[in-house]
Length: 188
Ligand SMILES: CC(C)(COP(=O)(O)OP(=O)(O)OC[C@H]1O[C@@H](n2cnc3c(N)ncnc32)[C@H](O)[C@@H]1OP(=O)(O)O)[C@@H](O)C(=O)NCCC(=O)NCCS
Image (cartoon, rainbow, N blue to C red; front, side, top):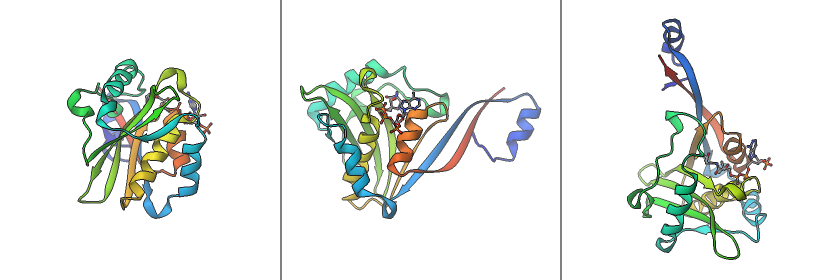
């Protein structure tokens, strides 16, 4: 994987490597976040409720992950490893947010990793149950995570994804992330 503007890319392509996937990273600076718009993204999915996960939710998170683990587009750069009890565990630096139906079913989640040394939050993954996609839940999850962490004085939020994933590109842009890195995956 190389940055798309890496000077080695043309030479590699000449010698038989080819680009097999493209991916990107993006940033939202806290001082540019539009809290009112973020709140609207969360409120518009009612009666689905979005909020922070607790330990009690972990069995549902693991079940949702197991049901969706093959749904992530892209290649090695944007691979999603199946969650384990350990990687699903919540802590002050690994936070999770969920979306629940009125009957209490978890239908979406996003996990973020907090780097307190640099006041930066990096999205780990976002997923919505197949039968609830395309109704704003993914955007609401991303918005809710930003809103919660803005209140904890995070300075910058980072996220990323595959160029082959229009839903997460659109959701990130709506929340205010601006693309600042382009990557290519090359294979011989
Ligand atoms: C990516 C994902 C989380 C998005 O969740 P979602 O609830 O469907 O997203 P939203 O309904 O908030 O849609 C976000 C935007 O993408 C658009 N969109 C959704 N699916 C789309 C598709 N297949 N093609 C193009 N646009 C799409 C929506 O129209 C919406 O834009 P709009 O607000 O302008 O209408 C969900 O598709 C998913 O779980 N995918 C599998 C896991 C994954 O790829 N996760 C992301 C990488 S970590």
